[in-house]
Length: 171
Image 1 (tube, helix red, strand yellow):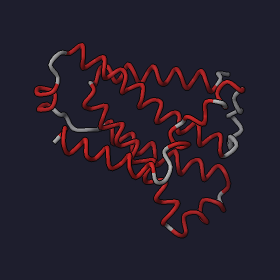
Image 2: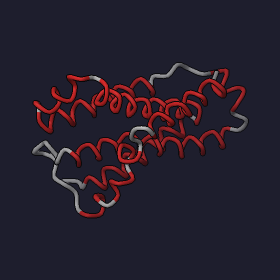
Image 3: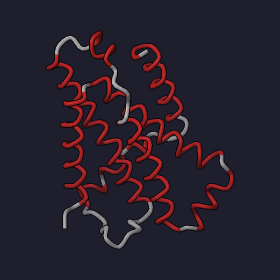
Image 4: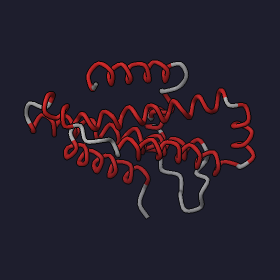
């Protein structure tokens, strides 16, 4: 059995390695798609009337699963971004800088995705029998996971900044 905190950091490192191979521009699109996923979850729970009742009747497992699936779908499509050759030619002056920044942004993506899933697991009391609650080392860290601080209205500003960046820099 592996501790959730260890698994979290392993995945952050894996995402950083993937980020170094993909480059910073593609990783930024993934970051923005993960922010958009958290935005969709927040808006869905606040403005779709039947969603809260639907999730509540299914228990903690359904609430966790719906949130994790939404975030997973946005992460999947973020990583399926089209080849951005023009950006690579124009913005990437040196491959080392692109890889180094890709490592940082890839680690950030791992933090966003796995941190959000770990946060959802925690707030829904680890609803699966094969997942045991972690020790104190990670529960103190949960206040810094994205869904804890990226709430309404902060998520609105994050989406505005993300799409401004996409329009100004990437298009």
